[in-house]
Image 1: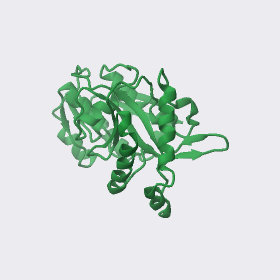
Image 2: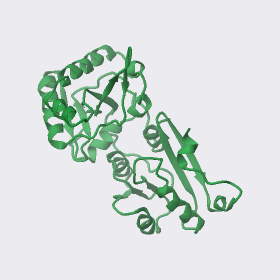
Image 3: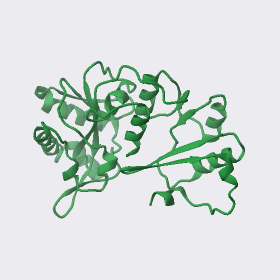
Length: 285
């Protein structure tokens, strides 16, 4: 399973037909979610291959807030009569608010990354209508003034949005077994903590200081700072904490495209001197 799907499943959420990632995230991202349907609408760049399009990394693209506001305004002007409202959260994430359930199932962008997008388009009874909407979005963004400016700075054009994580806001969630603290910045993790009635802290300090602050908690879920598994600095900090007995058990969810490697490590395993240390990314190849 991709990482976000695994985390949702660990919190007792069901695919109906998506995990309701967008509503949970938007609810803690400064948006009034209410009882309506939400999708993530990530700004992305589709790369033309010989006979297809692929979803380029990163997804979502980094977009200046001023440029994001301009594109969102263009999308809302075009689709207002179709019952769609595009929004930007405090985190800068893009969302799509719908007046009714769209009758589609979507694919998380991590699953479709660098692959032919044809098989990852919306599925379901209303799939053809939503593929048409996406085609309209692509035409609207083609030669958009924002993209002209981005390309002049050698930045990837925002030539589409990627819809995923659709659903309604769940009322409450049972806490994942044993967890009593979330340490995270992403709207999804913060939203899950809020739904579960759990304490939450932001990731603002270096990891060693974060570990000092969560010592008093039995079971904390930490969203690791940083974005690349090629950087082993945070894992080295966790390893040393295990060796020192500050962590009784460490469970790592290492997301890599459409899969997640789940590794459980205890302090005793740090003393297996015959095992050669390897970069974390090696385990995901």
